[in-house]
Amino acid sequence: LARDFSPANFSLNNYIRTFEAVPFGRYYLNSVVVSVSVTTVQILISSLAAFAFARLRFRGREAIFLFYLATLMIPFPVTLIPNFLIIKNFGWYDTYLALIVPGLFSVFSTFLLRQYYRGIPLDFDEAARMDGASSLRIWWQIIVPLSGP
Image 1 (cartoon, rainbow, N blue to C red):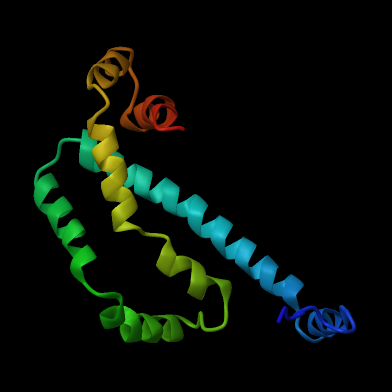
Image 2 (cartoon, rainbow, N blue to C red):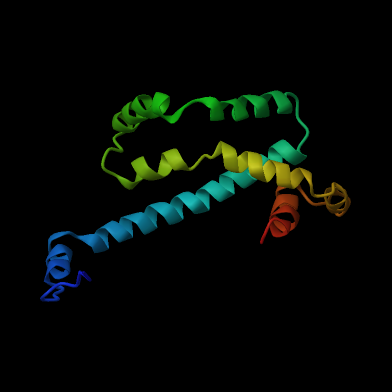
């Protein structure tokens, strides 16, 4: 009772008609633009925020970080309608900005990078400060290279 599941007449016509009817090229371009933009800016922002929380000493640092971390406990559906209304009021509806801006800030990425940065010895920072390096220079020339794969 062997069954043959292969089609009687093999044809790619359905695929051809689908690609003619639907602009998949545009969809892929949209995905690339949004994903590259969000990833690049999110890494930059999260890395800078993590550096500030891990290395810089300022009043209320831990309290601010705990408040920042507490936002992870807010479920996404709770923020869905307010986010939509904000995007609509900014005039970003049906634009790339509506997809990119909400994804730029990642609490989880900041938390993950902060934990990693805290594991890097402070001796590097102290040596750089003795050589006259600013906080941004320490971040860019010491912390970021040490964070690479």
